[in-house]
Length: 275
Image (cartoon, rainbow, N blue to C red; front, side, top):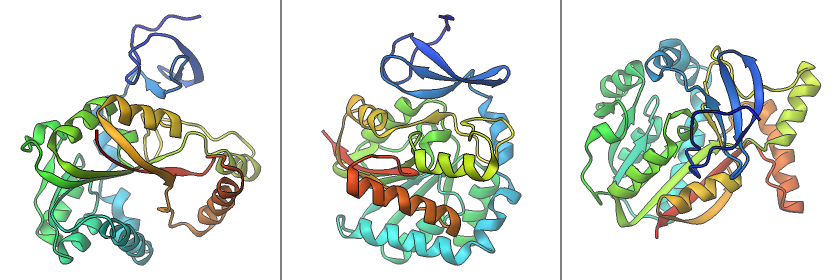
């Protein structure tokens, strides 16, 4: 077994196997103890910001705009069934569509974003101040937010444990954390990709449109929440796909989940509170 001079971000152990090894110097490793899957070495986060420029967001605000607005409205509607309006922080807020809708409904909104283009866009387009940079650097007061959301962002950060601990610090005792991440066990989507493309779906390439550094399963995501002071209220399939073909494939996986209990759908959504 090849030694690696690192410890697992989730369990703190040093026992890994190689999942992918065809993008040197990067490898995708899996912890033999807890099952966390991640990229090693982690790419330079400053260099990764170049992926999230104006071209990255163009489709969101043009041909996908209406579908994405419906997605955000559905997410906000579900959130408001369980939480009254208050202080909301959206981490990795992207083009700000979710923040804009929440603000219209009476929420006091804040956002963070690592992309310089996105942070500037939200400020100019919606008039919402967005802190550009890592969450901890924002210096938010403790126990301030009623709701913290993190829609498909945790897989992009270099320290998931650190992010969740900071969220735990700034969330009110009665506050709610809602986050969504891709599911590393999305076997139906992986099978469809192999059938259509004739090759295995890769977990990482530095040339990817979206570079995922960590790959979560329902088991490892629950473990992260438990380790960082959260109690998971529910873990369900995430319904954030806007591409019709992918949505159909994922519908098959979600149906399988409700029939068999197998969590092999494309992405995971969790709701959690402080312990």
